[in-house]
Image 1 (cartoon, rainbow, N blue to C red):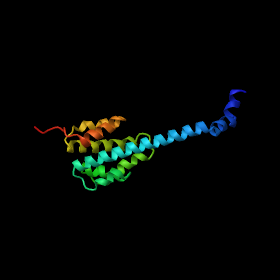
Image 2 (image 1 turned 90 degrees about the horizontal axis):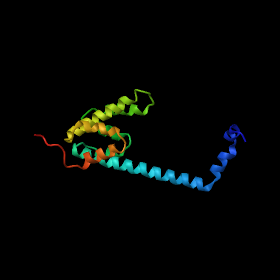
Image 3 (image 1 turned 120 degrees about the vertical axis):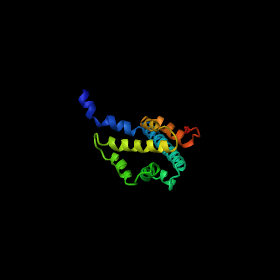
Length: 149
């Protein structure tokens, strides 16, 4: 069998799909993946809830609502709620312009970090995966914020 025949031979794919072991592994992987995503989302929402408490922002429960949490971010930063729409523009596929809403969100987190007495530059660390979860946790539950001298 030539390479071209192997690529277009539907039996190769049919065997993989019909194999119960492979299907069970895929389902298990998908289940674990969804659980991890859910855990990260809940952790992030609880951290934002506590940060909103530190900034004395009303409607803290919006941290758990997927799109409304962008509105909560604008309220924590003391900006108009209309700014939440600019952050939502990041979900529209645009090659370079998609970075602008991410920059605006980092700017809002910069303002929030300074409100809760952390250096604003720590908001730049939110760009780094895993580190962003640590930073949110530090902001939410740390009592060691910088003191004004």
